[in-house]
Image 1 (cartoon, rainbow, N blue to C red):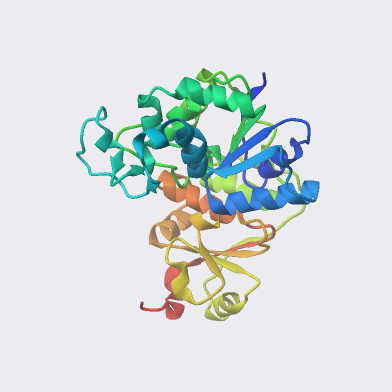
Image 2: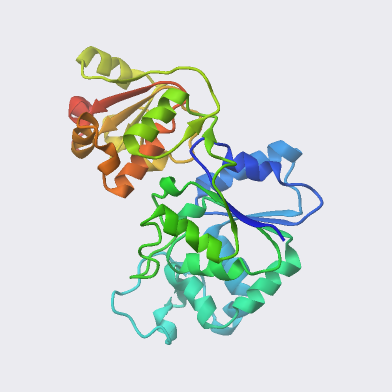
Length: 342
């Protein structure tokens, strides 16, 4: 039974890799975290087969967790009515008490995986997976954290093929957080890989190690300046430059074919824009303008982008790796004239 995790780089075609492995003979379950990626996968499945086959099931993570993992075993018995996405009280009841997991007949989303474990149905869950599916795929594996990651450890023991794909350095969100549970899961790339090895998965670092989206120029910038290794399948040259002249910035700001990527509050600049982290999954940008906040600007000019806070560095990596063509950088202070006050 093939069980593996593939660590990819941005633009390497990880979602396409998943889609290419689908067929009409086996039963596939695909889970992803974000709605954006759910829609992207759905579109690609339809493009491959010209319809959405019945042997393929696609879920966002919390839909999978609630409807497939929890509801068949526990929903009727407990009379719950859905999920709560707000965080539970800081000092709640004991984990052995149901009000640790439930409030007003709704389950805390960040503790549902733990609740399933506590209720002793993990074995039943794996049997259910084996009954209905031959292959279990997860896209954006790097987003799984907290109790949800512990659930994956159990699921990985099911007698089905397992394929997880993701980009460790695009970890900008978590499925859930709960105190100290897996708090340091993403603190170190090597130890992160070890978690999967201990699950019995083959760790693949080569299959998706080169980008189709990014040029060698952009990949070299990311590798050398951000300290994140990424290769390119391409052999062309693009440009990376810092812009500080008003006329050029005006042209870039008003050009709706060039996305402006801000650290935060992109919507205040009245232009075609995204925030760094929120641009994850976007694949249609050509030339981009990356707008640096104060800390990013200092790091850019002092050649210390690799020393940024890991979450900030990861978001900047996401932003830079959206570029199919050139990258312009600019200081957010240079664009303050366009920023709305509210």
